[in-house]
Length: 289
Image 1 (cartoon, one colour):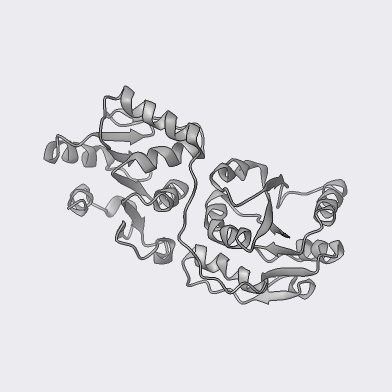
Image 2 (tube, one colour):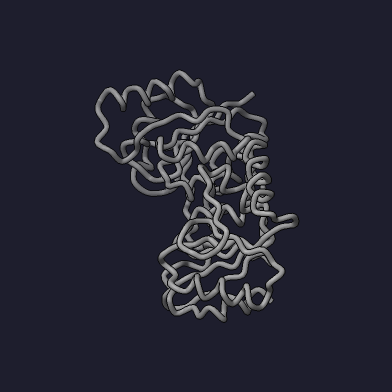
């Protein structure tokens, strides 16, 4: 079996966008390990395609010991190929020192130390953008849908929360945040127009039944249990998790958010204005059909 390592300095959302690439690598078949910042490691409970998740604090002023330890991790893994998801002169040089035969990354800083350089296509939907790195390893496979696997314990927890609220058959989940000032009006109009539809808030601040999730597994389970999710760009991870669990989502976006951040799907309804505050509550309600 092949062994691949992915070095990913990105945020939680960027890690989620890597999942189709990781799935394709694992189906080679291969063992796939990732090196990520400690703060985003918990997201990988949703990724069954990864064998090991290793911590490394990217972007900080790492000591020589930390740098040497990472080099040792790469060498000791006896990897057939390693993928770097962001251009980096230091990391590319480290990979060259490691002696891994195939070293793949995007064009940019440090590309001289790589064996395969992939031209980035910034206009693509991010999972497709990252999946292009598979071509650097010689894998000519299509990018699958963004997807996660929710832990059974999280599903059980979400079902218990639903029963405690007296909800029997689904709910509309409103992801409350301070960036959009009209959530209260949206909730009031929804309750008036659809009084039989349970409306639940994820996060405090609204006069609604409220759910609080401890981690990404519980968040994904709550999103998957909803019949519809209302969420703004101010909650990028929850927005992308809603896409990944294939729950219909109404996404509130400002003009500053690129359209490519959502897939072309009947399950995604984007509402866009110059600013989030300019999206009227009635627009949100009307988007529900």
